[in-house]
Length: 365
Image (tube, rainbow, N blue to C red):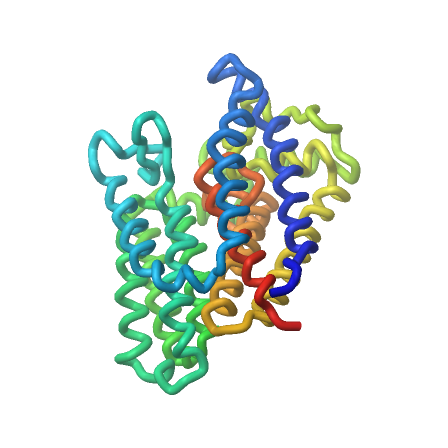
C-alpha cells in the first residue's frame, strides 16, 4: 500500500465545503418561506447527508475495495428492492412528476441514487475478470447478461419515472461496458435501442416534449414551460464576471424554481460571477483527471472499471446539470453532485469517493 491520492481528496473536500456554503445561501429564502428557518436545508444536508457521508467515506477508504466484489450481487439485489418500494403506497413519496423517494420513520431515501453506485460495483465485479478477453466478444456470455441486468434497472426507473437519473446510470454503465472491451457492434445495438426508448418516452409524456421544445426554443412560452430555463439564464447573465455578491441573489426569492436542487448552479453564477464559476468547472475537470489517473493505476480489472465508472458518473452528471442551466442541454432535473441539496445523493457520492481513495492506496505508478 502507498499513500492515498491527496489531490483527489482535496478536490472532493473543496467542492463539498463550497457546496455547503452555496447551499446555505441559495436555500435561505425558500427555507424561510416553507419552514420559517433560513438554515433548514443546510441543517438537513449536514445531518442527513454530510455526516453519514463522511462516516461512509472514512470507513470505505480504510477497507480494501476488493472485498466489495463478494457483496456486489447482494448490494444490487437490495438496491433494486428499494427501487420497487417506491411503488408501495404508504412508503412512496412523490415529487413533481416523479415518485423516486421512500419515507421510512420520517427519513426520506432516494433509491435511484444508491443504484448509481451499487450497479457500478456489480458491473465492475462481473466484467473485471472478463476485461479484454474473448468473453467480451461473445453475445451469450457478455451482451445478453448485461442487457438483462441493465434492463431491470431501466424498467424500474422508467416506471417512476426518473429519466434524468436513468440517463446518468445508462451512460456510466455503457462507459464501463466499453472499457471492459465490449465490441462496437454491441454498443451500437444498445445506443439504437436507447434512442428508440427516448423517442417513445417523449411521445407518451407531453411534458418531456415540452422540455425538448423549450431547449430548442428557450423563448417559447416564457411564463409557462419555458419559465425555468429563462429564469436560470437570467440569473446566470445577471452575475456577470464577478457576481452580485455572496447571499445577494435576486432569483432565489421565489423566482427561480429548485434553487436548492438542480438550479443551484444558476444561483452560484448569479452571486459569484463567471470567474468563480469557471473555477468550479475547472475543479470538476481536475477531479476527472485525477479519477482517471487512479483508474489507470488500479492493480486489477475490478478496481480499474470501478474507478472509471465512479469518475464518469460524477463528472458526467456535473456537466449535464451545468449544461442544462446554461441552455446547451435540455432540463433533466439532475442535481449537481456534491453540491445540490439531497442527503442520499451526498452520502452516496462521498461513499463512492471513499472507494476511489482506497483504490489509489493500492494503485501503481
